[in-house]
Image 1 (cartoon, rainbow, N blue to C red):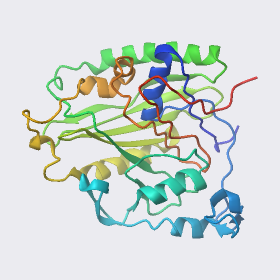
Image 2: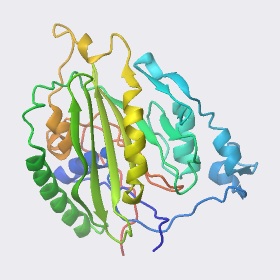
Image 3: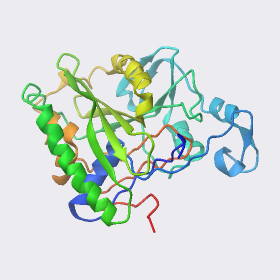
Length: 322
C-alpha cells in the first residue's frame, strides 16, 4: 500500500466502548486505512465532488482560492478568542471549513467548528497538505491544580491498556485495529499561559505509516479551546515545527481568559488536566458529551465529525470488514 491512505474513524455505539470511541474520535484517532485519491492540481474535478452548484467544473486551485483563507489578526466566532497569524498560515471561516471538510475531503456534513487553519505554502488538497480544526468545549473552567501532580508515564500506561482493550473490541465488531503505542511528544502545560499540548502515536491495521495525533488545549474562563491536528508520523517534523507558533498566537479575549474566572458565577468543569489527556476516563464519566467529535486527516478523502448526543448515540462511519 502506498502513502496515499484513507484514514477512517469508527465509533461503536454500545456501552462504555461507545463512550471511549466518542473521545477517541474527538481527539482525532484513526482506524482502517485504505487507498485515497489526490486531485491533480492542473485538472478539473467532478462537479459533485467540490463544486457549489453541482454543474460547473472547478480546478483544485479554484476550489482552494474559493475558501478565502486570510492571515493577520483573526477574531474567532463569538469573539471568544483571537489568532494573530503570520503569512505562513491561513484561517478559513466555519462556512468554508465545512466546504473543505465535506466537498473537498468527502466528509459527512454538519461539522460545528470555529474554523480551521491551513499552511499557506501547500494546498489542502495535496498529500502533504495539513490543517488544524478549531472547536470549543463549553464545559466550564478547568482547574489546573493537578498540573504538578500528574505522572504522565503512569497515565500513558493506563491509556495504552485502555487502547488495547478498545482495539480488541473494534476487531471483534469487524473494524480495523487501532492502538496507542506512545507519546509522539509528551504533555506540556504552561501554568503562566494555561496552554496545554501533547502528541500521540497510533498504529493502525494495514497502514504503512503510523498516525500522529497532535492536541492543543487552551484553558479559558468558560471552557477549553481545542485545536486538533492528525497526520502521519512521517509529517511529525513539520507539525512539531509549526504548532508551537500557532499555539503562541492563539489567545482568549478579555473576559474569556482563564484569569477572568469568577467563582461566584462561573461553572467549574467536573474534570482536570489529566482527564483532558486521558480522554477515555472522562468519557466513561460522561464528561465529554458536548465535544463535537472532529477528526482531521490531511488527505482529500477522510471521515470526520461525528456528533454524539448525551454520550449514548454513536453513528458508525467507516468500512466494516467482510
